[in-house]
Image (cartoon, rainbow, N blue to C red):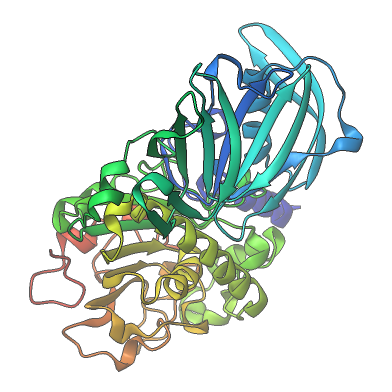
Length: 478
């Protein structure tokens, strides 16, 4: 009975920690700017002649899911554009993992509303568009290419004309591949000849002049944060691979501010690498709890000091490479964020990366996707999960630093001070780097807060800024 009580306590403690969030993020709507994604969404309504009503084309969001209607499971009631947008957005953030759904519910003030409309979703693999069109109180939709073309006649009536992966302006003799989502508007004269053609980004920026002048912008230095597991309460809420300009999950405990202050990037973006505990070396919550019990609640400490096999160190290869593969989607979404206007054609930004825990495997997939498309700068790897399973060609980077517990070293800390959430091993290939450009930095010996949980959590990593001096391994500088 005693051990059962302790086991329950362990599980409750893990639920309270996970990667701790100071706010209940399950109640936070996705309100931050989504700057990078693969699928652009369009909504409009047409009359009987296919003219767009009120010339209103809505472009509310980008996602990394292709969400379309399931014709066999939808009703034909009069669903407004606003509500259609809301259920599509709701389904994009559905945490159940289902691929098809027919019932949606949301609340306005004190009133709950249920909508019956069949939608299905698939993870995106390339840049494209999804269009929802309302006509005669019924909805249809189709999958389109990156560039959407609209025609405006002399009476200012708008119609959709075609979709393409290229920017084509007959009036200006321009024909070039598109690097992201654009809208091309062709204005016609009375005699149906072209009066003007304009190009807009998905966000609404007029970029016609960029294409005419073939303008090039300067490369920038960009900092990317890739988080890991967001805790058991978000177990089913796996990454949606969106690139955002804010830490929407409040994951980084303001340590991101310290990185930004030291590195002074021109921009900072965030990616989510959280996936199920099944992909980790623990494989299950039960195995995690068992490891924590035998590593923490030790009655004969002297004997158990070096008994590191109580940690879950057996590689979960399948889970690791599943996360790595998903990271490639994040890489494609990041490219969309880095280069979302024609001015960046031919420009290669320099990328610095900070990743934590499960975010390491995700980062490896992102690196593979970005090879030859960016310049790799510095990478800071905090408490990586299963780091010795795989690595990258680290010679591509200016610096490669790993931070965390010293498991496997000659003078390793005792078992109960080790990171048990992600038992540490050296990032594969890091030992081959010169000492001035790569290596491992460990918790200081006198650091007081070292244990199974705290040795993994970001709130406990201030030491990398407070203790590491300029000439030492892992020093962070611009």
